[in-house]
Each structure stands twice: as C-alpha cells, then as structure tokens.
Image (cartoon, rainbow, N blue to C red; front, side, top):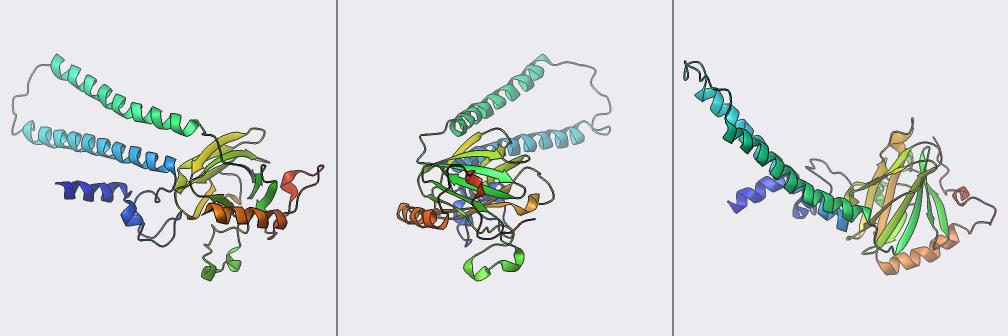
Amino acid sequence: MNKIFGFLTLMFAGLSSQAVAQTEALGIAHDKQLGFQEAASTFAYKVHDFHTMLLWVITLITLLVLGLIIWIAFRYNDKANPVPATFTHNKFWERLWTIIPVLILVVIAIPSFRLMYYEGKTPEPDITIKATGYQWYWGYEYPNEEISFLSYMIPEKEIDKDAGQVRLLSVDNALVVPVDSTVQILTTAGDVLHAFAIPAFSIKKDAVPGRLNETWFKATKIGTFYGQCSEICGTGHAYMPIEIKVVSQEDYNAWVLTAKEKFSALNDNEAPIKIASSNPFHW
C-alpha cells in the first residue's frame, strides 16, 4: 500500500526530489517533466508540500463524486428502478454534504493562511537586491555593495552550449547570491508592468511603475536557476529572462570584488540603472 501511495504521489505531483535529481541542471524545465521544478528554497518546499496535500484532497473528492455518479447511473436507471421515489428532501444527507465541505475548506484554509503569512513576512535579510523591469531587460542593484548593472538575454546566435548557456534563458549578467542566505527582492518597473518570477524558488512579484513591491527567498542549493518576466509587457515579453546563480559564501564574496571592478561606481548625479551592459542587446 505504501508503494502504491508513493507511486501515485510521484505520478500526480511530480515533486519527488529523487526523480528530479536525475536531471543535470537545476532551475529549468526538462523534457518529459511532470509537475513542478525541483524546490530550491525554504518557501518552495512549503509550497510543494501544500500542493501535494491539495492534490490528494482533490483526487479523493473526484473519485468519490465519480463513484457516486457511477453508482447512481446503475442503481437508479429506468430498468433497475422502474418506480422512482417520491421524496424531495433528506435532512440528514443535506446537513452532511454541507458540513463536510466546510470542514474540508477549513483543513485547506489553515495551512494556506500559514503559508501566506510565511511568504509575506520577510525575515531579516542578509542581502537586498532591487530588480527593475524594462522593455525588455532587467536592471539590478545591490545597494549595500554599491553594485548596479543591466541584464540582457543572450541572443540565440551567441549561445554557447558548451558553457552551459540555455537558449532564451541565459543572460549576459546574472544575479549572484550566496546559498543559505535570506535575499530580499525589491521590484519595480521603469515603463510598463513586469513581474519577477523564479519557479524553483516559488516566488512571483509584480514590478509596477511608481511602486516598490517586496518578496524574498532563501536558496538551499548551489546551482543556476532561471525565471522570466511573468506579466505581458509588449512584443519582447518572451525575451527578458532572469538568471540567478547560487554560489557558496566564499564564491559570492569573490564575485562582489570582481563585480565592483566590472561595474564601475556611479557618479552621484547619475541614475543607478544607467550602467551599461557588456552585451548591448536591444529589441
């Protein structure tokens, strides 16, 4: 019975880390993938667990309703029941099918509210990053490190597969964060609506002109993770990916020193976003 339960969980939810671990890359969709990308943040694990619980609730309800429909179709068809009943109400069953759905909703609501509270309350951040969406690229700022740069998608003809670059997802300047650190993301936009989304971290936050929205994640695995703008923002919407490299704390410290040299400090009179990208790719 346990083997059947485990098989169904893997088949329906696709959340087994063992199954996903067989793939080579993290934070990216794979051929024949079933379910979510492998969870790679503390929040994503909670989201996946909640999804699995909901999936079982929905599956049991669906099977129950299907069973009732089949039973009624055979038990109360014209041949099996030529003289239909004349009653119109049954207080016991009416109360039961009112109380049971309420209890099911309560069971769903409690972990749902707990999850919303966990996601909405940002812990004390180790790193703060401002992500600004533009048509059609991203601008990133590390205010505490005085690092700012633009991030453009690498054109398909320039993709280097030997270097692990991925078509439509790899960028010239990726975000770099240390593993097991709380990263606060402040999102906004410089023109139209955009959205900052990383499936492996289970985060998605709208980037709205004139507003500063907040989300956070704590990556639990070293690797490269991808996302995309998830708010239709014009003809180049499909070409403004997000690439995040999660590294060790030592590698992150080394990257900060390199990035400060690569992306020169701004003058006081310049807007942070005006630091040019090393790849002037525009749509």
